[in-house]
Image (tube, rainbow, N blue to C red; front, side, top):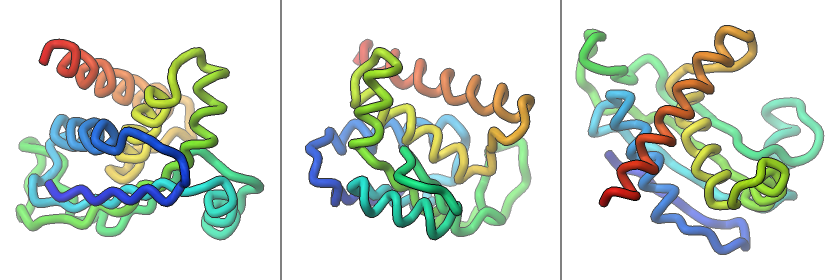
Length: 156
């Protein structure tokens, strides 16, 4: 799996861990191993601009996901696919927003960035949380992926 990451946020973050959690989530979801993903970390001003331009939101948000090629995503062995590599899309993270949310959530900024990375990856795979049922499914899956990733890190 090809995952490119660029930190243009001005904030020092563990990009290796972000890459690892993204790779874990996509592997667990059965995404084609030839798939490509881009992760961009940006500052608050640029995230606010993206949020306004693409989502109609005001101010910066924590994560945005821009799917590229949803039709060619291989969701796993249970779904027939052509096996072509997919350009999944882009995940854009705002570490400064994540750090503020982490304080409110009572965990580290790194933990918040890992959660947001998995959240963005699930959006790229077509998950959403607009409806209560969708939210329950997406957040349960998000938590399971994070727990299995953390367990793998602790054990290895």
